[in-house]
Length: 66
Image 1: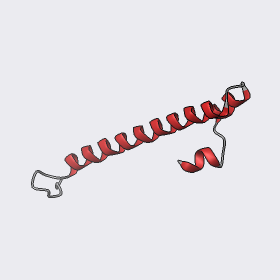
Image 2: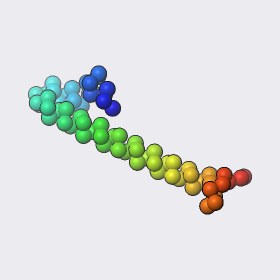
Image 3: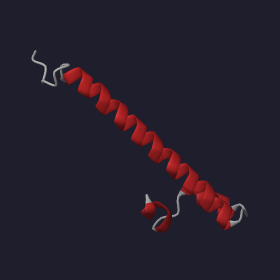
Image 4: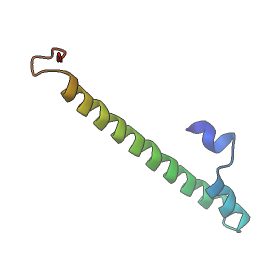
């Protein structure tokens, strides 16, 4: 996530800078978007792991057989 803003200028931030927006404002928007994407990925990953756990293990924490 740190390399996204430093190594490559993402499209939204570049577009804002080219349109005349102050670079500090464009960077703040980019940071907000990257944090939102990271948060959404974290929540989705947690929910997938939780559902998988319930599907593959019993209440006694044993692997379900077919």
